[in-house]
Image: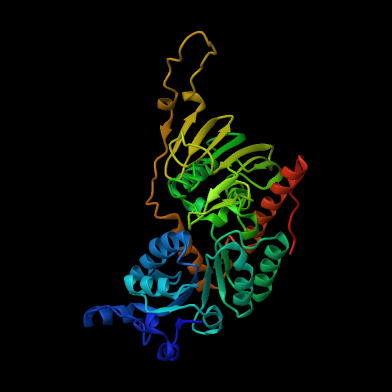
Length: 421
């Protein structure tokens, strides 16, 4: 394994790694800034970030979350200042070296075992492909690391539950990315729920997706493994993990699932411009019963063209009001502002229905959702307390995906049993 993680590794590393310096933590440039930095910072939290050469690992977790926190520092609950130091981990030495040089990151490695074994590393983060996640998270938990991970956490419910059980027994702070609950649109939607705006909630309708090009002409926006079931691909496995925590976080526990998973596009072209058969589902249509008598229906597709304001939108309807939330915006209509349309197919509609909804204000500074959860999770690590979105919540997401696929195969509604560790 090539590595630029320890100084001993540097001495024997090939040219691609030798330009990366790992002698000591980076300090601000001027002496005055260095003194101020040292006086304010009580400790440095070192985070091994595995999978940062991928799209989500790089853009959302490194570029928009950890690097800004490296610059600003983190304030712990007790008011102390904590420095954040990322260590890049992956399989491509060239990509890691280039990324480290571009962003001034001192430590990187292709040796996952060495970074997990290093006692100075407190947090292990995983954004790898799903098929590699269980083994890496298992090793990190056994080494006593706090873990934070993308989802799904494993390819099977059995493995996902085992991870949750291991984390509980190890006494570590474990967290799973539930980014959508931190996005401005859903933050405002949850606020309406908490303030009783909807009255009795009746239903939720969700629409997610966009057209992913097949790759024969224009290149695809998603990697080819997403469409190979043998590599952990499929939109049900990918998105039902999200929808489970969205429904739990906004409305309540998911009690049943009825799903239809399909493959609309049977052939796609990979990164080498070679055709390959699609073996995973690229669309799934689900109906869910939620505690309290709420019915949710969510369509997810990589074979749909967008005619909505955002790539994902959720509409919640209640006896007193309704709201539509996307990633950023949330618009609501109270019962006293609800129009009284009359069905008449012989006349054109004259009402501008969208104009009759009111924008829900932010009423706060709503930062990047990934960054907000990173901050919350790291404060939980520093305070030695559980993170509210733990590996058990991740296991429930894997469970819903498994049951969704089973429901589609068997053509029937399935109960969602409680998971007990």
